[in-house]
Image (cartoon, rainbow, N blue to C red; front, side):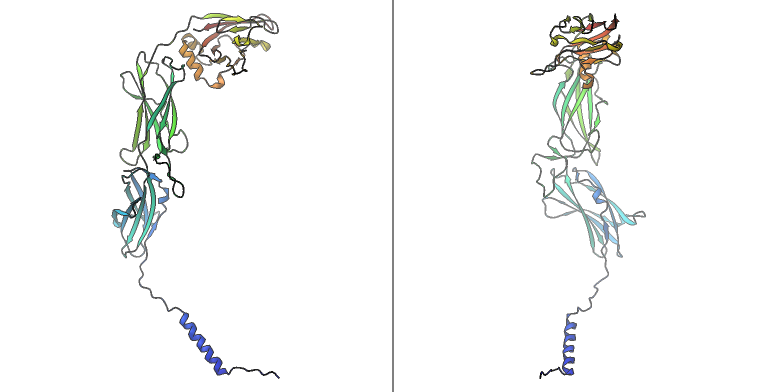
Length: 442
């Protein structure tokens, strides 16, 4: 028979009492409030809109938005820390009475005009604003800047006459292409950790704003060339990084026997007085020569007969002579290749394949002021017009040629140019046509 034993009720009550005493020891006693002081409120919503870099000496307006919590604000302290210094230093202490209440924001506002220190390029500066309450409690907001160079640099790499062969004589109307480097070794942003630091030679610059071009003719006054002045870049985000630009300067036509000097001025904005910083470079003087005159007009006639053209349909512009049908295609600079549909087509028959590939004769048909261009033509003027024409306008085929057309030809890719006007289109049968040209060349 199995016997069961049960503890006496008095024993059970004793155990429960011990458990209750143990629980009471684990419960924290009621905490005591030492004081009712509260921290002030300092909003940081204005700080992220600031730039990441400023130049030494710039005055940056930083708006602080804050509010007292029961105890009024006593003062605002401004600290700065310049790496690698371990500690911050007070640079301004401003009485709270200088703040103004904003009904729109429902806070006190204060604009702190912070002047960037004169330290080395790329140095990191930490700006901190500390709002101090009358009860001694504070609230801090901070933001970091990098120190950047405000004054841009300009370097002239080369000056090339793009409307004349190398070492050719400069004349009025020529285009000189200047290749410039702005902010050499410049970077736009500092790669913060954990990214690798920039090269030792790198210079952190402020954004380039614009490039202004000046010119002085002879001993006259320097004047701004408005056609060449530009925003940097023309569209898009501005940068302080190294930038290479080209400037195509058209030499003034109102100068004879004088020199012209170009000066290039890069500008960056500056938060101070004056509000811009400028760097410039002056190019060497360009001295003008006299244009090369063309010979008097000569008459050339191309005659197309039958269905294949015959022996007088092609013309050699270098020898100023007709090329027979069996002649070399390399000599057929200009030829009538079609008279169908009552329209005449002129075309070069120069080959385009080979080793190296040969360059065929190309034509630019003048659509405006052709008569004046023909009457006043010089080697320099027709070369300028051809080389400045869009590539799409430099063609090997001229469709629907009519009397009065004015055409400039560059012969076989050489520095050899002619200008001609169509003086006659005489159709003697449905297929036979004679085209008469007045040609100006050297």
